[in-house]
Length: 292
Image (cartoon, rainbow, N blue to C red):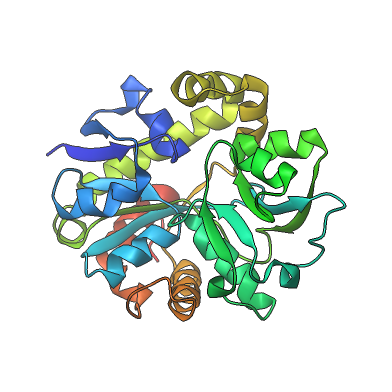
């Protein structure tokens, strides 16, 4: 049985895996551009395995899509940050009340921003979410928006430009893991086949860690940008794959509660309902030689 793996450029591990043919035994690649479709592609049987940030699996659970967690990356503390204009009117998170903030709505950035706001006594509903676009850096520089959640190469370039200040990073706020998921029925019926994908992902991560410039070239071919900026951004990622643990489940539950309280999720979510212990044991054995 070949596992159909969904690949989009927003998930670097899967993106690089799709370019390493020697790792694709037992794996079929299905490419798509909109990461927000991952849960629907899983539910419709178009793909069997996908990768997103922390928010989309919770959206899927709130919408009664029967997903299951397979594995996660280590926390990505250098991956993203909330930026404001340097020497501008926004000095604290509290200053963002009633202000427009640019972010990738529905991505991990929604969880991050909602948590930053909640920790400051505000709600996601207290700001004006502005869907991110390639012009986000110019919007912030020119005062069109008051805040911007940046990530990857765009964060590297924003930091180098010198026009922005970091209001909050992810460290100490959210783990910002890359999250890999499947359908629950497949998690229960085909754990060994899913472990094959996990093994391939681990090797793809190892390749990316050892070849950041070559990896950056692949990303630039797909989305453009600077090889140097992308290589710098890729070097900030941990490139470590972990099994699903109680720590991760607790992180997701906290995210679910924050997003529901913020009015972003349509229903309360029990994150542990997407945890399949029998799959976890197989994946943990694959990654570390131990069960969890």
